[in-house]
Length: 181
Ligand SMILES: Nc1nc2c(ncn2[C@@H]2O[C@H](COP(=O)(O)OP(=O)(O)O)[C@@H](O)[C@H]2O)c(=O)[nH]1
Ligand SMILES: Nc1ncnc2c1ncn2[C@@H]1O[C@H](COP(=O)(O)OP(=O)(O)O)[C@@H](O)[C@H]1O
Image 1 (cartoon, protein in one colour):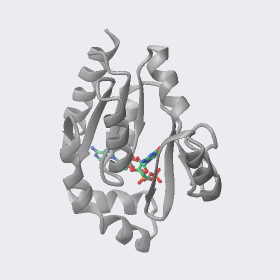
Image 2: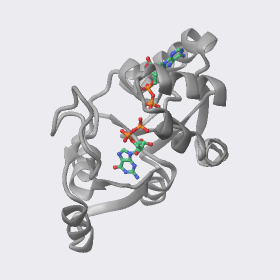
Image 3: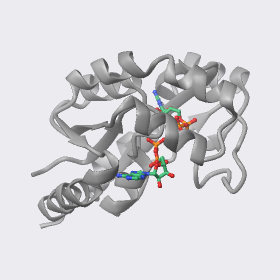
Image 4: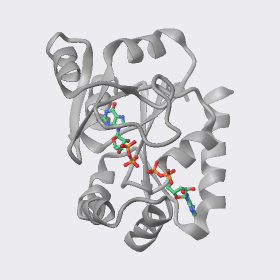
């Protein structure tokens, strides 16, 4: 395999970040206008910036894509992806569907889109356990069916239900070995 960028896509709380950290590759730090959650660090988890700054970066050609997701902007800088493709060391990122599609269409040979799927019930429960406010859980779950449908654009889909974590981990391990050998 010669992919430079592994993109995880899936509903909120499907387990994208969990599988991403199991993969163990360096993460692309993307940009968002949402507020940091407790424990998140600027420059490590995201580059946190205002909507205006992200819009300006997009207008001036610094971002590959910028997408609004649940009221906030998210975007990937062109430089971060160029660095990966030129640097040779594969990296990973998590992205909502439109951003994932934009990167895949720009770098089809170098990008592997990995979908993460889970049941609606499990997703809702994980969001609650993560301390998400009930109103926000409802907002996120409203898009669940569409987000599952959008997985059809992925190169492969990993089922990450509660009882499948071990299997999901072994698929990620196979990917890791294939990428690094
Ligand atoms: N298009 C796009 N989506 C991103 C980017 N960075 C993160 N996302 C996605 O934005 C969505 C919201 O992320 P986040 O606020 O961290 O919360 P989450 O829903 O709990 O993962 C997730 O689907 C992320 O994968 C990016 O650079 N571009
Ligand atoms: N297979 C699984 N079984 C049970 N809990 C899981 C599983 N995968 C992830 N989780 C838990 O679900 C929550 C959401 O996972 P996370 O990776 O943060 O999702 P996402 O990045 O898609 O929003 C976390 O608390 C995580 O520990």
